[in-house]
Image (cartoon, rainbow, N blue to C red; front, side, top):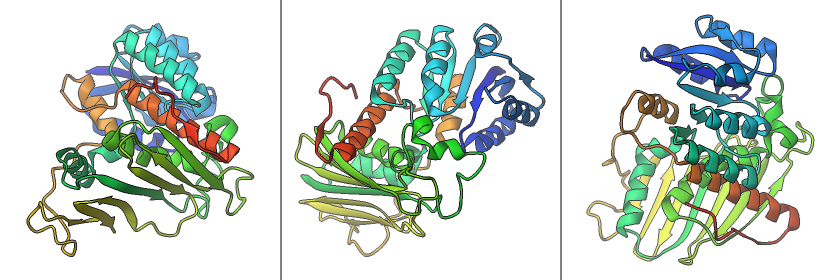
Amino acid sequence: MKKLALLGAAHIHTPGFVKRLLDRKDVQVKSVWDHDSERAAKNAAALNNAAVASEPSAIWNDSDIDAVIICSETNRHADLVNGSAAAGKHMFVEKPLGFSGTDAQVMAKAIRQAGVIFQTGYFMRGMPIYQFLRQKLQEGLFGKVTRIRLSNCHAGSLRGYFDSDWSWMADPAIAGCGAFGDLGTHVLDLLLWWCGTPERVTADTAVATGRYGQCDECGEGLLRFPDGCIASLAAGWVDVADPVKVLISGVEGHACVIGNQLYLTSAKLEGADGVTAWTDLPPALPHAFELFLDALNGKKVPLVTPEEAALRSVVMDAMYQAAKKKQWVNVPASCEK
């Protein structure tokens, strides 16, 4: 049985991860650390009375611990990731990897050099529709792709998701971003997974309710790719509905996802009439967190690479810079996919 430690328990997804850990028979959480002692004790109790570590170093120096789960505030990622890499601990790091593009790239290098198993929380890759669309983009079903639009929105601000325990997530000084970065990073991951690295980006963000001060509550990004494709991203916490998740337009095909149903139009694919929902899809993959636990136990599963995770932070950082400057920002050519 693999022994794990929870290294930071601040993220809103932590309770879900705790439940997943308790449901597994092949892993055990030995220790929990958080700079907030009450939060550490609460999660340690939930994890079958795991030990509460006084410092991260107590976890790093414990040879019995195989891996760490980092769910801290984003501005603590660098110290925790770099320390875990130096200690040779496998790691799951909740998204986004970096507070900025710069620290994300430093972390990716440390993780790669340590040779440890890495994963982050880009769970949307495992969904059947998104796997299928990636495959068809690679096969050229759409011909030359001219436009892609992705959206990931919910009513977090309207429903007070970040009013209490998770309030740091609405403080860009701690989280590194607001709603656009928080939810937008998921669809940014899909877009880069499908299309590679953009040449340049721009964006704008807005405060809608003011519930969290000047933290952005919604945003739109525009990305230009080397092949000429123009993509846009929408993300926000102030949406009462978000029915249209994907639009892909190519000179030989079209796809849209409406209400979690895929509609395809293409003469290259029998039955793709754009009217009937397309249901011939690959099976869903386990959640990204489950894939990490599977990898720890020796299964060969698809994971997000450290370089991929860092690139998402670099591109999102560039979009926030663009929003601040009100201009296009070039994505560094040195960024690795």
